[in-house]
Image (cartoon, rainbow, N blue to C red):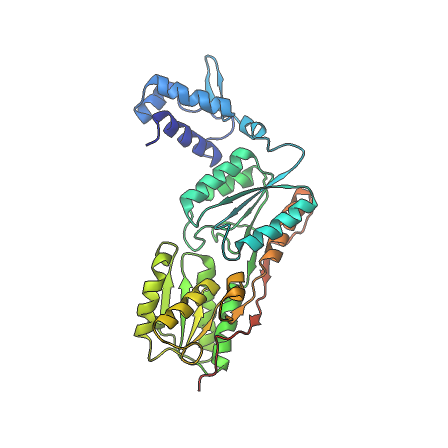
Length: 361
């Protein structure tokens, strides 16, 4: 359990960084804070002293305590070497190392520093990452949104960056409620091409497995539905398996049930990504469903795990390193005062044939 003074520190800091308290605004009096937090005057003073030492507050004798922005200069964020913050959902797995490598490579060319954080696709961790970036005083920010298909409670922090004229750009997805530049794969097109490929091979009973708390999953579902509609194939809700960040750990169990329930119907599946595609391959082995003879499978993202698996997964391309590089280049140009930078960039996916799709005869 946090000490009481730390709770006060965290709350006031959060209010300052998210714009709840404005620069120069007077915070509540010591006695008001005592009542708000049900603590002693000593506890309040300890919290205020700590916040003043960190540069978040300044006290004027006989007047009160006011919001300061000295924390930015204390952080070292305004040295000659500019620092770009990078927040991704994950760091060490799937396509993220390639994206980060692209960002880092481009930043190094112009002698920019990189400050990296990950959220594990959790909004509470995203809040901490955003607070860290604001406290440090980064010069720019590249973000992969957390649970981008759901309402985000951290919007105030993004608005704080805007108010402070700190440029930021999003990758892989974006928050629809924010007007923000982004670099994304055309996820609708990716799933559309995957579904069309299966239809061209004679499949008419095609399922989909998609992650629905991220915008990518929403758009990949849209592409699947679009391809079915064009081919005049019916959409069957029972041929859809959806999951989210929290239920991903149960995916193997849910896949077994899904594949067993549809065993005599489905001949092909479009997967949210390669990770899911290979999970389907593994479950098929356990259920003695032969791939691709009985079930064709398409992944998406052309990840290193698809390239290194013991079966070559049919998949769609993702720009990965190029996306990272382009996002870093956008931030650098923005900081250099370049005008007319793109607000929306979509990369077009291409099919990569593997061993997991067969003709449906």
